[in-house]
Structures are given as structure tokens and as C-alpha cells.
Amino acid sequence: MSEKKQVSRREFLNYTLTGVGGFMAAGMMVSPLRMAIDPVLKAKDAGDYANVKVAVKDITTEPKRIEWTIDQVDAWYESEVNKSAWVFKNDKDEIIALSPICKHLGCIVTWEGSDDFPNEFYCPCHGGRYYKDGTNVPHTPPNAPLDYYEQKIKDGMLYLGDTIERSEAK
Image (cartoon, rainbow, N blue to C red):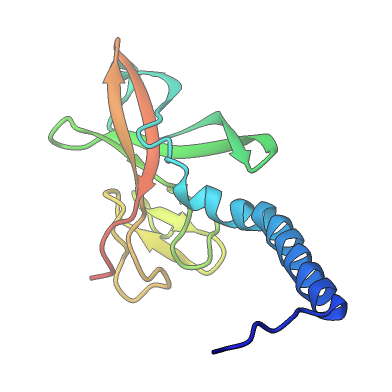
């Protein structure tokens, strides 16, 4: 027959304090774990479009820079973010909305910003150039075409969403 071993007072306190300490440590880890995991599990507000206050009838074949503001929420911090785009109609009468951010170093490109290169988007930081459709001019610093914005038209007004990255340089 086996004999039951008595638990001493010291062993009992050791087991109890270890269990209580482990329970408290686990409770303290819940908050940081939730902060780390919650943004990953949170559904993204995909498809949010902002009214850029440009009527479709006013858009021409000449690129025009438009600016608008969106509300951005980063965890508990809310702020207003200014955005901009180059908007125009192509030869097929389709609306094109290009991001003005150069794919080389993130500077802002301008339309016809250089007298030497008319009818092109030009980045003054390092001489980057893009054709009107946003594709980069070969052998210039940009390594990819300009991104373009998701868009929709509602009640004759242009709404822009997130930028979409285009394929690598040609």
C-alpha cells in the first residue's frame, strides 16, 4: 500500500503563492496582448471614399491638382490628414486620379514643373519624370509608376478612396 504524503505548511504556501503570482501575471498580460492583437483583428473600413468636391463635368484633359481632408484614427489619436491628387480625363474620356507622391523618394511631383520636359509630371528633388498616364520615364530616378486612386462617381461628384500601387517600372 502506498502512503499519502502530507504537504507541509511551507510547500502549501509555496504552491499557493506560485499559483496566485501566475494568475496575477496572466492578468497583467491581457491588456498588452489585446493592444497588440486588436488592430490586426479589427475590420478595416475598406471602401471609404471621400468627396473631393470636384464635379465630373469640370474635369478636363489638363491635369489639375485637387486637395481634400480626411479624418484619420490611429489607436486613440484622431487627426485630419490633407491628401491630394492629380485629376484629369484621358483620351478615352476616363477619369484618372494619380497620387502626386514620387516613387523615388516621396517628393511631390508637379505637372509641367520643368520647362525642359513639357507635358510630363516632374519631381524637382532628383529630376524624376513621369508621362501623363503616370508611368515613369525610362532611365530617370523613379523606379515605378505613380500610384492611382480608387474612384467612384456619385451624383455627378468625384469620390476618391485609397491609393492602388501599380506594377514595377518598365
